[in-house]
Length: 97
Image (cartoon, rainbow, N blue to C red):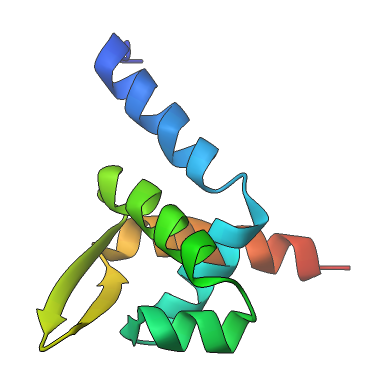
């Protein structure tokens, strides 16, 4: 088996850190259904705008979400499908009886 280098171990630990927060899980799950503006995330998840902005910044710094600006709105979507697959598998595991 190939040894993992320190950078890879750190990046994997950061991904799991991101998935360890209930608010970030809810945001990622919502974004898995489609691109959303900050306002939509606030409304759909009944969270404060500052909370959503803080969590999106955290997720963006880890390259788990990406953003695009349209006028005065910023829209977020998943950076790639890998983390969403892990999230969905974990949700399915939690729901399995």
